[in-house]
Image (cartoon, rainbow, N blue to C red; front, side, top):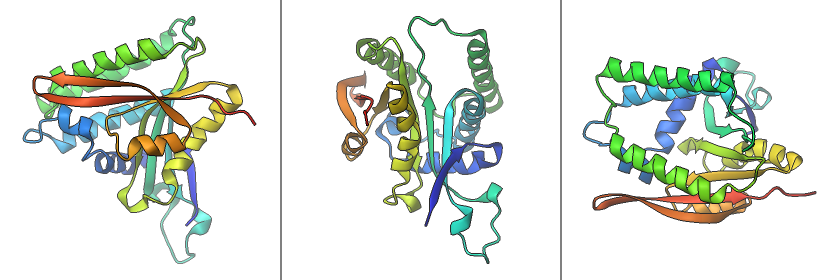
Length: 236
């Protein structure tokens, strides 16, 4: 089966969210930050949908799909409904000396406002333990402050997820290479964070990343690890 990576469109959002929810169902961060007894899958869907809509305009948001020419002529599936096999969201590098633009600020505010409306609509955060969410964000900020020393900024892999049915087919590598090739051409570093050591760290190492920092996010007796990895640009 031939696979292509294309920019996320409105029609792809339901499939992209399904892949993300499936892929992160057993993620250590997900289990740590959400109360399973109160988790609202539809609330989570709407939160991810807001993120996807934001990402179409403000991030490098891609989906992996089976190419049309690899399908049987008898297959009547249309392009818009082609199943999503994988998803990735990268944030473009932000030079440290460059202030945030008004457009970027407004888009971030719009996303925050959409999430606030979701809180009102669902009368809460859908099982999200907000104190743990902010513990994680604080540790993220500490890690990035310690690691990010390149004034040109970093391509930040915010999300990468592959459908269980498509794992082992090279979909994740294609999603990574779509952006890492750009980073290599520009001579810019890449960065990612993971809460799962096995098998994620080894997979990312094969993509050219190396471990830069390990941090613990702790709330009482419960803790979640934060593995921070950096990829240096490759030269031909």
